[in-house]
Length: 220
Image (tube, rainbow, N blue to C red):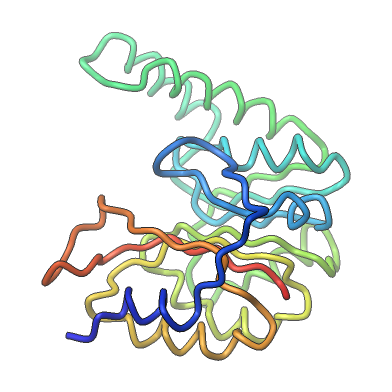
């Protein structure tokens, strides 16, 4: 099996000294340059689960941008009930879970924030969703953590490169789909730098190679 992780790192990674981590420590946080956030019109966030700290950091840092979150597994009341149950069960992260519930309630009460309870899968189109709810946006930050469905949208992202300021991803199932990721990186490399990459160990390994990695791209 090709060492796709080392290949991406050797041929495409251009480490930036301006990166900061936005969102939580560990899973759910991503590295970007602050300018990528402050110079954007909208954050499209596919997949949020119970962690919206990245989205909240974006919201606070850019007071003029819109925020569109897409995830059918969460709602105000689902999170609240789960948070209350968590207090009485032998669960970790009780306080951080409740903190994220408060953030989610706060964000979804803001006019410039929208949560859609729907699956982000084809034939859905990301930029059609953005157009429907916020009109045309020329400078978009994309976050996709959708458990393998990210591959369904790579061709659309290639077609809308001119509207994208930055992208952060979790890419899954790389043991069988790494060729799709390599092709995507090659095609966007004229317009975007890969500025950060790391292994997400929760995805597991095959032959010592990670099945899940996190990547940050920024426009050149």
